[in-house]
Image 1 (cartoon, rainbow, N blue to C red):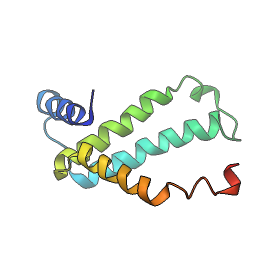
Image 2 (image 1 turned 60 degrees about the vertical axis):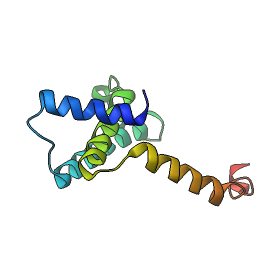
Image 3 (image 1 turned 90 degrees about the vertical axis):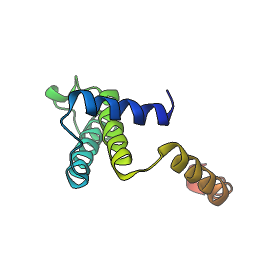
Length: 108
């Protein structure tokens, strides 16, 4: 699936199962909440915090998919073509950062 297909699939899902998109501010709050859930898993599973027994069955992939779903919602409702935006960003990062990270002594 490509980004355009994903955006359409989310739009179709909203039309079929949702009443409407939540407004942009509500979706921004949702995105923050979902990113927080990803952060919690990573901090406890891969970081130095102890993982609570109740968190051990949390699925990082599912939480990342929640983040992606809300990002796709925000893109749809604000008229952003994520494929185009991502390609432009990757091109910019390639031009700007090509040598930068190779010279970073902290990464060696």
